[in-house]
Image: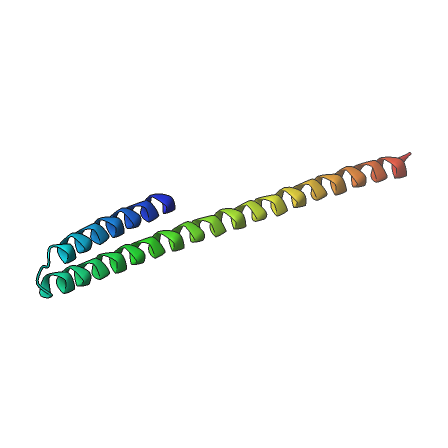
Length: 98
């Protein structure tokens, strides 16, 4: 998803550069390139904001997944330790009865 956003930004930037080059080579008005530049800057800014939001979302999801994995591992270790303690108590109590 991150790569597709970068690819999209690159395509828009390339198209904008081609359009700006074509308008300059055709000796267009100075207003047209400035308007075009302004629109390009706005589009790039909007796409960068979208890309940052996607990156933040992906980072948040990754951190949540790592945290839940760590909690699951700790819980599994606790259950294993409790099972060992119960087995040790059972063996000790059986030895005492004999």
